[in-house]
Image 1 (cartoon, protein in one colour):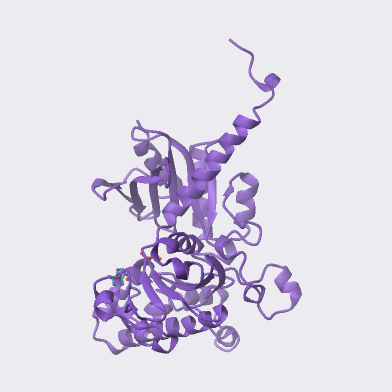
Image 2: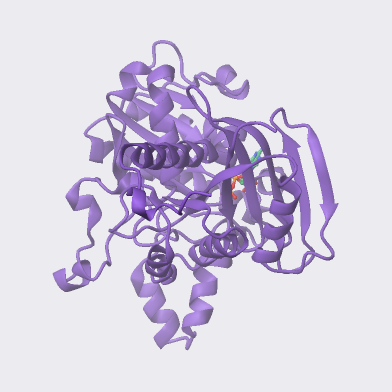
Length: 409
Ligand code: ADP
């Protein structure tokens, strides 16, 4: 068996994605990845090796239906294959308290549970993964890595709403999400576009959740998402920015309950709501229906608008980066977004974009555009590895007093 590995967990409502990384010189190396889908219904486990070769694909009939049972199956499956030294978890919200990854204990979990109302689709499931791991593997070093942390130093006026100060002080402020993805892009930008990396970059993370981030010199200065991950761009099923008057109207005039409004905002809107067909961009692009076209048009339009707004935050623009499912794989969406951004100095190279980049603009384009595959798991593995190394160094430098050791023999 090889050196102790880092297990990376991304626990969602019905799925649990995992990756195994071996620490070493430089970046940790991914040796396995996989997922358990269908948690709560018919769980199914699959895993692939570092090169993507499938090594397991089985239903889990006896695994029970919750996160703990499924994580238990994963640990059992991993036991003969790897020694897990630590687990790194993706956690969507760290509030104003956690500006960087943190070692998790019971107090930290309690604090994070208090943030669940701010990210109801993700936070409770992220914490289910942490709690299940603590019960199954007591004492294992666990690290929480936050989607909010990259945005912690954004410019002050981008961090607050125009609301009474007491509400800002109560934590109703603009946080920003997808931070692990943005942090990864910021780390690779110097090798992709060294000039832009120390300049002004807008990154569009376009997956089933979608947001955009303005970066100056590799640091987040503003983001399209605010208090919750429902803000900003329209997404697969989330509405994005909405006139607050709509919520008041639904509640007061149309008699909608809070639960119905929450469902509307998170699950029934965005691409799915507008098209009435699907939240999957591939299906909408292939559809001949007018409502599918309208949903895609709205998505593209709002990305273009947000790009303009974030370029204003940055007082100019050196590069745009596309990432995540739609950003990495849909040349059509990239083409349509960039074709409308000539005014910003973006000269699209149609053939390069169709070929998947990485550079999407002509050599003479004043502003460059790129496609860069994101890697949030690697960021979590790196952060977790750093905390493991720091704890090991602290234990070496400050060993426990001799009388705290058990008697010899
Ligand atoms: P998540 O936010 O769930 O991690 P992903 O980053 O995996 O999401 O992105 C999922 C989205 O990517 C889905 O809406 C899917 O339709 C879209 N997608 C994946 N492949 C393509 C493609 N070839 N063309 C257009 N959209 C795609």
